[in-house]
Length: 263
Length: 261
Image (cartoon, rainbow over all chains, first blue to last red; front, side):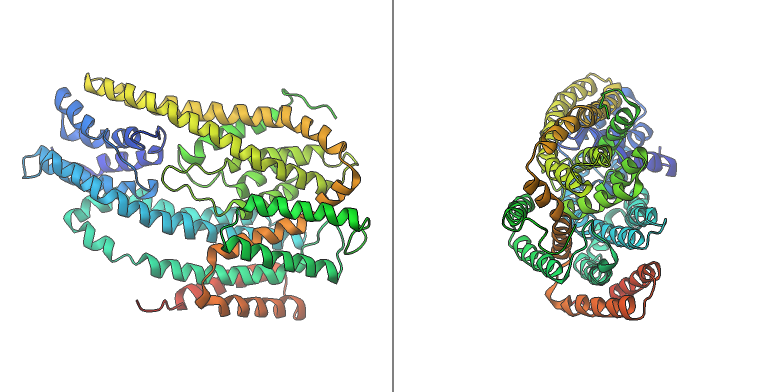
C-alpha cells in the first residue's frame, strides 16, 4: 500500500518527541523507531514484517531534532519502494539515514543553535530591557518576540520536513546543497550586530540599583571589553564571573563606600 | 518569612520545573525552557514579573553560548533560572541584604547548581540505555508497545527529575542560602551589590562573541552611533527604538554581502 499524507504527517509530528529516550548507546534510536511506526504500519500490515522493519530502525541514529523529519521523509520513500518491490532494499534505507544524519546535524546546529537562537534571544532581551527602562508594561512582548522569532522558522521546518523529504526523494542531496548556510549565518550575524549596537546605545536608560557616576560607567565598560577579549580566547564564563566577584569584593574592602557613587 | 517545602509557590515552581525539564531536551523543544522565558514565568508565579524578567535576561545572555551539540549535556539553565528567580523574589524585600546583592548571590550559586543538575540528566540518559534494550528486546519478540512505553517512561523520569530538583532547590536550598547570605560580612554584600552591572557587561560580551564578525564591525559601530543619536539627542522613545532596531536588523540581513570564497 502506498503511503498517504496522513501517515507522513503522523510520523512527522512524532519527531517532536524524537529525543525522549536519548541514550548514550544509540542516541535517538528509540525515538526514531517510534516516529517511523505510522509509516511502517502502513507499509507492512503483517506483524512479523512490521517487527522486522521496526528492528531495522532501532539502530544508531543521531541528528538535529528539527531536521529529522527530512530524513524521515526520505527513508519513508525508500521503505515504500522496498515494501512494494520497486527496486529498493532494506540496506538502502539504512544508507539513506546514515548518509544524511551527519550533514543535517551540522546544518541544524550551525543554523538553529548557533545563530537563530542567539539572534532571537538578543531580540527578546533588547525588547525586555527597553520596556523595563521605560517602565512599560510591554516587557513580556520581549518574551513573545523571542519565542516567535525562533519558533516560526523552527515549526515550518519541523512540520513540513517529512513531506519535503518524501517529495524530494533522490533529489534531496542536490536540493540541500543549495542551502548556503554560511551565507545565512553571515546575514544573521549582521542582523545580530545591529540589534547589539542598539541595545548598547539604549542601556543608559536602564537604571541600576545604585546611581553610578562617570567613573562607574568607565569601570563597567572596561570590564565589558576585558570580558569580551577573555570570552574570545575561550576563557570559561564561570571563571570570569568568579574573578569579577573577587575584584568587586576586594574593591569593597579597599573602598568602603561605593567606588562610583552613593548607593 | 517561613520557607516550607509545601507552600503553594514552591509547589507551583516545582511543577513548572518538571514541565520545562521535559521540554528542554526530551519533548517539543520550543525554547520554553530558556532562561528568558523561565525568568518571566517564575516571576509571574511569584508576583514580580519585572525582576523575574531581569534575571531571565541576565541568565539568557550568560548561558546563551552553551550549545547542546552531540552528546554534550549543557548545564541545566532552566532549573538554575527557576531557583535563582524564585529564591531572589522570596528573599527580596526582607530588608537586609539589599535586593541586588540577593539576586547576584542567587545567580552565582546557580552556576554550580546548574552543573550538578546536568549530572542528573546524565543519569537519566544512562537509564535510557536500559529502556532502549528493553524496547529492542520487545520489538525482536514482535511486541511494539514497548516503544511507546519507553517514550512515556523516559518523559516521566525527566518530569520527576526536574520537578524534584526544583522543589528541593526552592524549598530547601533557598533557605540555606539565605542563612549563608545574612552571615556574610558587609564588604562581601557590597561586592555582590556592585556585580549587577558587571553581570550585564559580561552577558553583553558573551552575546557579542556569538555574533562577532570582523568584516561587520562597522555595522556594530554605526548602529550604536545612530541609536545613540536617536535615543539621547532626539529622545526617540525606546519602544519606537525597538521597532527601528528590528527594521534595521532585517535590512542589514538582506543587504549584507558575504565575501566570495
